[in-house]
Image 1: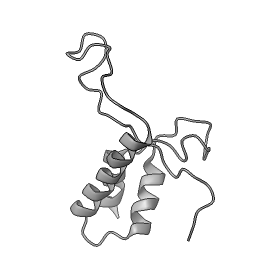
Image 2: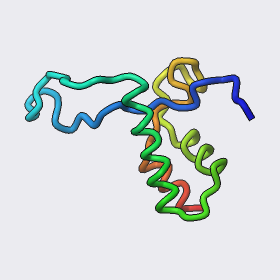
Image 3: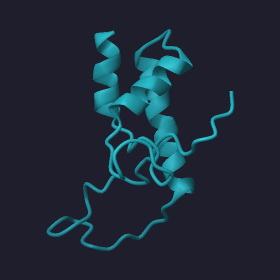
Image 4: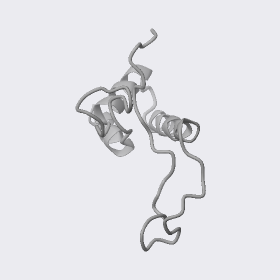
Length: 98
């Protein structure tokens, strides 16, 4: 069924472990960003969770990603970040407990 409230979730577009003050990459950001970069990260998280947990239904995956997301906008759903930023580790832990 088509959801009228979008986006469901937000995702980071890159892993910034090597960027920032006193990091090897410094403060430069020599890469693209936006949905074209964030969507593959979100899809990768979903694929890894489905691979780690065979038999996981699409609805259970969606629910876990939403429930474990880090809410960075106004509390609850908003039209900028949905329910929040995907938190892969928290989603995995939540699904493993079920």
